[in-house]
Length: 168
View 1: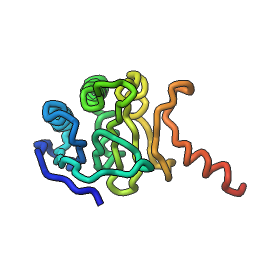
View 2: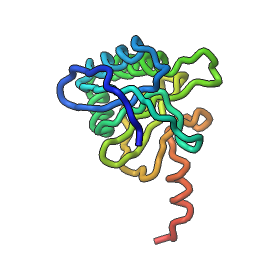
View 3: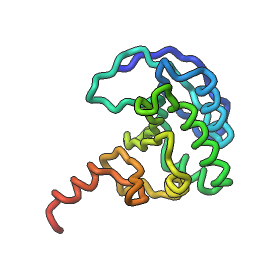
View 4: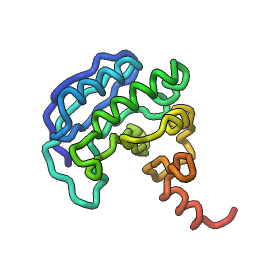
């Protein structure tokens, strides 16, 4: 179980979300993320992570749990470019590290299904554009990563599961 200490709250209206924030993410970066989500109607409560995770677990800088499809759909109906630009800026700031090879992503997790979307610091704008208009219901396993070569979001676990399912 992850332990943490509450360090801040967001003041949005509509959606409520919780975030686990790694110890080494600056307070300024955390505040920027809270403010970016608040501008889009998400009240974000953050907690600092105290427990050490094992090497087999996904290493992230911030994990945000929220009603993911509703959040992304809401971004799609608002000023999309402003929304993903703000989120992209916050992701870059939160995931930036001294050593680029050591950067860790910001992860969005659907509160109901547990599906995770991994947002890396250097994602292209088209990745955010695709994400805000994406239907997440076909994905069962996740996590979703943006495949730069294919220029689309994908879940390798979902693809593998589909290959092993018997034909109907």
